[in-house]
Image (cartoon, rainbow, N blue to C red; front, side):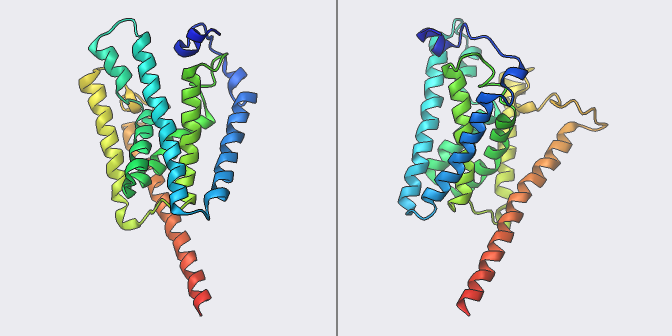
Length: 254
């Protein structure tokens, strides 16, 4: 693979599923992701707030580097410049891409509701890649595009776990409406993309059922219900953990 091929992803054949799905490269990604989650949690859990903030700033810087560099590269190699082609390069349109920008904004603004939402939405987006890396590990060579996809999803998942294990997430039931509103805004953005900016498209799987369930009612209703239960699970677990911690503190104070 030449230098140009590395940046453009040209002359990089696709692999069949049997050669990349849960094969050596995929297993290495899974192991590295797990090791980063455990090791960084153990290293930073007793460090100062400043040290933890710096760690997340590093994550945010890596995300920014890949997001900006990928767009610059794609603009350079684009052969037909139209407003649609340029917008498709610049705008975050897929769930994973939107969540990366949520991570970036949450890290640098430290807004609690965005940290919570980045954790909830980020796990949903990154776990799908880790279990089925159809974009990133599906090529013969690890080009820039493949590295960008693989590293951003790996670190995105690690960042989600660290937000919880390092105490940045606060899933209080009285504020459960916040991530739900964030999901609603994200899918409103998807609707704008699908029906106004790029009519006929299906970003965020809003138009066509990706699992082809053949339900007697709109599949979006089922997905919305699952999303509600999924979000609630974070708040329920957090409530239980806080309850156990409070009981331990009460016993220790007696």
